[in-house]
Image (cartoon, rainbow, N blue to C red; front, side, top):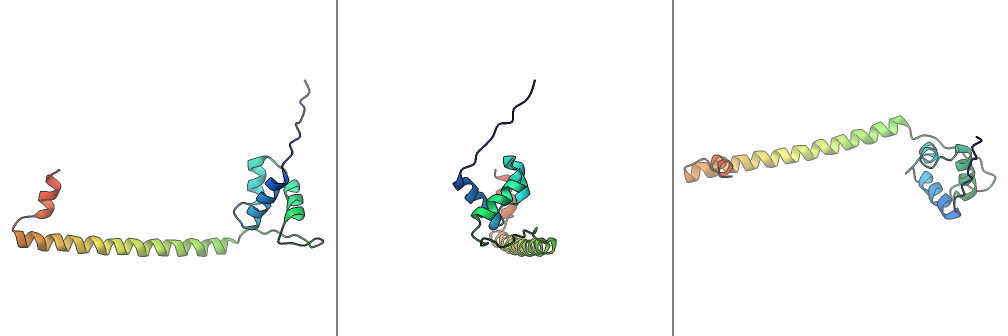
Amino acid sequence: MKEFKTTRHFSESFKKEKVKMIEEKQMTVIQLSKIYKVTGTAIYKWIRKYSTKISKGERLVLEKESEGAKTIELLRLVSELERKVGQKQLQIDYLEKAIGLGSEEVGYDIKKKFVSGH
């Protein structure tokens, strides 16, 4: 039995939306191709037709985001998270010291009483 390939048509607004996503680096041509089962060639045609970043007759060159740029961004994120963890640790240390001083003031271990009071 012969299988027939169904022809799909994507609306102009759909194509424009996907081209915009590619231009804004929210999605790559490969990702779009896999998700919607569209050839890369078709997607590049959409880009040539609907891109706001290139003018007619201009050659389109799409590059992958460099690994170096990704690494720098990930290192920046790690640094930010380490800073936040450090701040939280300072808060914990401060609160534990306050509980210790409060325990001395009232004459019993507040932390022990609080934890066992559940």
